[in-house]
Amino acid sequence: MPAGAAPVADSSSLSDSSDLLSMLSQAVLPSTTLDVPQQFYNNFSILGSAPLRPTSVPWSMPFCPPEDVSPILTLTLETLVKPQLEIFFERVYPMIPIFSRSYIMGRLSDIESHQNRTFVALILSMVSLSLIHPLKPEEISHRPTRAKQSKTLMDEVIRLRLKWDWASQASVEGATTSFMLFGTMFELSHAEGSRLRLKEAIGIGELLRLDEVRTYTSVEPDEARRRMRLYWVLGITERAYALQRCGSITFHGSLHTPAFKSLDPSQDLASRTLLHLAKLFSFVDSDIVSCWNGKCDSTICKILTKERVQSILRSLNGTPAQVFGSEIAFTGLSEVQQADLLITWQWLRNRVWRLAAGHGLTGDELGEEFGVGYVVDVASTTVLICRRLSSNALEAHGCGFVEKLYDIASIVTELLQTSTKLQSRLMDVAKTDQWTELLQNLYTFVASHRSGISFVQPMAQALSIASGVKLLCAPT
Image (cartoon, rainbow, N blue to C red; front, top):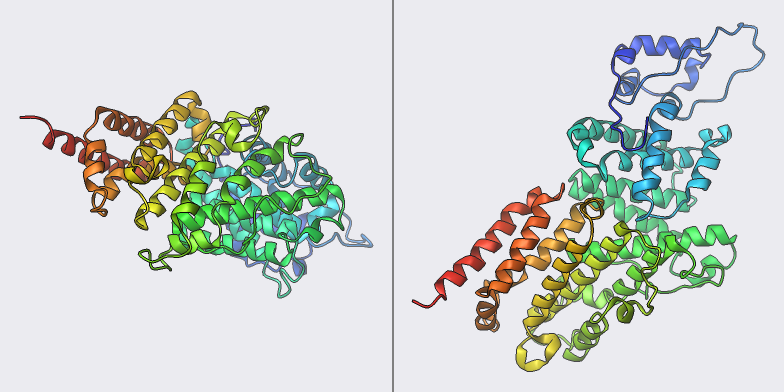
């Protein structure tokens, strides 16, 4: 199957589970090794055609083949798994660059690896995510079928983990598998289930002691590199998720560290985007998250001070070279990576200012960073970024990305309803042609995104409120 093509199932060849069991028995797979309920095999029909029947083998054969750890992997290796892995490395890997293509394909070519439950679960979780995220426009019509395939693969991943000693030995593969399940369930709108899988991935990362320098000094450079990327992926996602879903964080230290000499991010493109994101999210520590979740008294909070807010906002203000510390910060990065980095940067500026407003630390009289004009600048910069990037680069990201655009667009109308202190100044902004135009542009970006449907109505409401304010304030 060519990359980008929709993996439409062929149900005719495996419509009868009894035929499949007969086929498996003719392939000399002993029935004692198949400890899966018969109805389990009905799932194969949506994953693709089975391979041709092998020629019969004499019953005097002196040995039996090894247990087939995952019949699904065996039956769909050529028709689904390998083609979707190519799509994974084309579309998903730039955002989750933990295991390289050469590593995965090299191990997949080794038949012995097919008996390794942890590795097989990793492969199937990668395929599961690639089936539904991201999709090209011509593939969206096949999403219901893809979702069924994805769920079937997730069922198989969970089955492979049903041994009593699962996770007794923490591994990068195990943590990455849980993270892939998180991403898949998040894209399928299973909020609580995805949150559980993220916690699971972070828990394994904690067992690996990813936030300790010694974790990276006693292993081979390639393994150290995988661990560092996993640490960044988990730490960045955990902090973003905490701001979007009022969660907590496990990795409390700076995401910049630990560092090890064998990795030079300036030469490692796969790590560079993560390194830049890690720098951004290092400002979102456990204190900030605690304040965000309302665990402090915002009127007398000693954690989020004016000085701290000013320091963070100034650090996040400026050109990319000023913020990320290099004129070549974006050299070599794809548009997809740039979209993730640039929009997340503006979103964090917006969220920190929103937190400051909730603590009564904003107002034009307090300084440039604290004025309402700051969030207008964030929205204006976001629109310029979206205009510069291709629609494909924006579409490569899922609903979390769209939610960031919505947060940037809705802050003025949200605060109009909650902040009496800023209401007059917010009214002045809301009635301007500039703000209405910015909202309209952001609405267009959200509405045209494949994951934007759930945000269209609230975005339209924000635009309507701004238009209403403008109308009411018009001279008579």
